Length: 138
Image 1 (tube, rainbow, N blue to C red):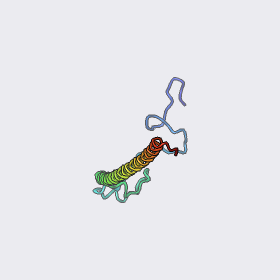
Image 2: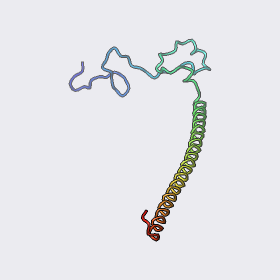
Image 3: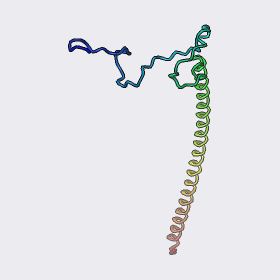
Image 4: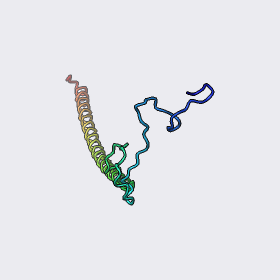
């Protein structure tokens, strides 16, 4: 038993901490024996408990290979975005042309209506004038 002056002994764990749960055993970093291909004596050893749930095929791939795949995917994505932007720009250009045509046609129609209206007013005014000069009430 520890006296009041002596420190309480702690179990040897990382940073001097214990779990507080006696049924939990301390986990150490998992080391795969399959990465040591040159040491044949390690091949007969039962591999330690796996800490990672990643499949072996994913874990063993090289970093450069994954980065190459990522760069390839990014290049494809950029190309797709460029094509999409180009298609959108073409659509906007055609839409602008159509709107300009509609606007021009509307302006032309409006001017023709105004011209016809002014022609009718002028004709009515001329008729009234003609009636005044001939002293005929129309």
